[in-house]
Length: 214
Image 1 (cartoon, rainbow, N blue to C red):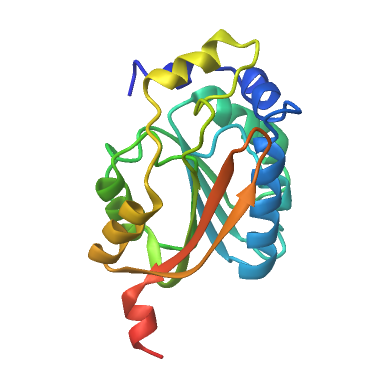
Image 2: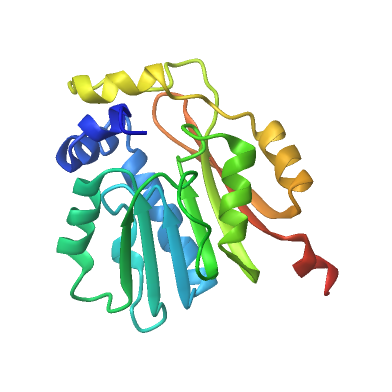
């Protein structure tokens, strides 16, 4: 991942692109995570591919005592540390590739991967994230759905445009089929409309063992 085009995208360019009026993906992700954190009330939280901190302002330190963020971009992690390091006492930030890292040392009540599977192998990614998930926990996934418009919206940032060469839209049907094969169940899914005829697909997954205990 050392040659990933993500490493050339500054936090400022990322946020400007994602929040542009004809994109508004920053606003959508912020709302998705706000609703998820309010509902799930995670005591421990892992955000994989965390970027520069979209949605982190909704993490309540009175509820969430441990937060781990993983990303390949050290600059994104520094932005999170600057913005949230003082208020989130149990903060751990790890710079690295989620698929190349050592197995997790602990598990989390909620694991989030928003717009990550467009850049990693689905099966390997689900296996690694499931390793990090508590048996009673929730895996929150956000995918970008296929549409008639280009996958990467046009904005003035050349660094963002280079993502089109590596981004792969994930079929939700294939994603869920692999998730089931890997021992996960889908508790809920929803569609979040975006400008430009695009949509986000949101999945709340849990380990099958959780369902079997009911």
